Amino acid sequence: MENETEQNPNAKMEYRRSICFGEIRVQQQIIDSFAASFPTSLNFIKALTLDTAQNHAKLAKMKAALRKTENELVKVLEAKTHKEAKQMDTRESISALKARVEKLKRSVQVQKARRDEYGSIISQESLALTEIEEKVKHAIEENGEIHEAISWYNRVLGFKIEGGHGVRFTFNNMDIENPKQEYSFTIRHADDAYSLLDCDPPLNGIKELINELNRTNGLFKFVRIMREKFQEAATLGMILLYC
Image (cartoon, rainbow, N blue to C red; front, side):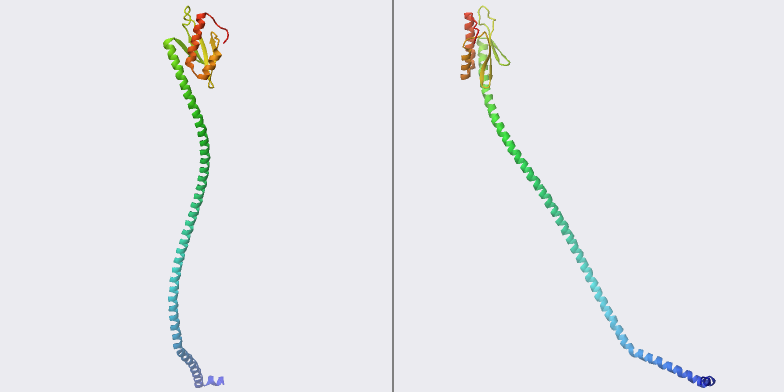
């Protein structure tokens, strides 16, 4: 049959026409189908476009909300960091204050101990000072008596006094024949008592005179009596060997 078609040009043309018409019908069906579905597709595309636009708007809002949330989060983190830093500073300040309080407590304890110690020392020193003041007062009174006696003897009788281990009283003008001959005695005052260290020449009754001196503290009277005894010894021309 193909041979017949090839041999008959009309048949060949008819055959090709039928094939073309078949393809045209297929393409027409495709076009019709596309044309029929195009409005639906267009509506779908429009709906999809609108939905996409709405989604873009929602996305923009979500991005804005996210940025706002991020900013708020940053602010919260900054506030938290500032609060933590402030709390840390507060803790450090409290620790430093506690350390200072402990140091002050120790200092107060030390000062209190020193105050008690100083109070005890001051009390002891006050007692010692009172005793010293009494001794000084007593010594001043004694020195006053001594100076009074010295002044009287220098003015009336003429004698000399020498200091050293004790106080040495020296008299002259006792012996008319030998006025330069010296008569002397040495006394010492220690531990609130007088004692005789030497007597030249020796005299009787010296021990009783020393006892009387310690009892009455009358140094002026003692010196006067000693001069009288030296004068008696010079007058009698006697030198006793024992006090």
